[in-house]
Image (cartoon, rainbow, N blue to C red):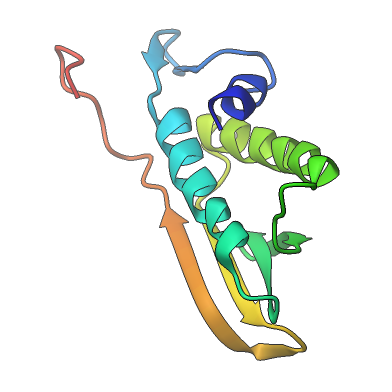
Length: 131
């Protein structure tokens, strides 16, 4: 996952947001976001075969992923693109929430498990930058 994170840090490779007053704020959120999302996605390896899942950003479903296997390189590349989009969107404060939903196969109304992340961009760092 660390290698995938390195590839998908952000579009421009930076982890800081330039504030409207011109100052830069270091953002630790992308790594935390990535860690939580990748942990959730790790669960794909352990899902029963009768489940499928969907990633939703805000109200928009962006992707459906089948259960992950050791021989799914194309899925991993797809995952890198999804994560790059998510991490960059969070860094730029465009994304308010992300939901990963696991459904029972062939039954969109039966939720097997789900996770949601909600981002609060109103929180400010302390003056000494220790938080």
